[in-house]
Amino acid sequence: MRPLRNPIIQSVLAHILAGWMQFCFATIRWTHENDALAEAVWADGGGVICAYWHSRIALSPACWPLGRAQPVKGLVSLSPDGQFIATAMALQGIPAVRGSSANKDKADRAKGGTQALRDGLKQLKVAALAVTPDGPRGPARQMAEGLPLMAKLSGAPVLFIGLSCNPAIRLNSWDRAVLPLPFGKGSIVWDVDRFPAGADLSEVAAAWSDRLTAVEARADAVTGLKRV
Image (spheres, rainbow, N blue to C red):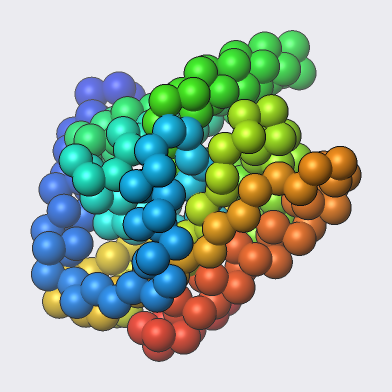
């Protein structure tokens, strides 16, 4: 795997992946549920947190209409794999805010996480921030407290986004990541909430995990993608 960490190879692969994703998005037949919730958030402007599980990160550019919604940046880990993802997303108009990585030592991880929080809150003053709250290493579909903390401190609404497509490629990764295939069926399902006043971070994280899983499961039901 070491050659895949080479910056030049990563850049080439990121360009290939970005081009493939754009081709797939253009040929997939998309359906939307509860999109009025997203439309209202876009119409209000200002900061918004966009949350989807890590397994659907390759589908995420399809849910954000650049030029109509707020400008968006993605929170991506500091790991070498994170750099690959950041490059591929930036090629599709979604630049990165780099966060902490599980591959760093504790001091570096704490420093990276603190800086990511600062940068994320700065982004949320004016625009959107996309977050995979079970990344970068899981456990899958378990939300850490970072996203609720960011919602609490910023006061920004949280859009829970369920993304699915079928047919798709399933990677043998910790999150069983989904990669799109062209000429299939796609689904985007929305939900929205704000951090409840006086609520406990861990309780909100658990409740929001269920809500995010629910919209993803609904998107999979629409496309017929098998849940794993």
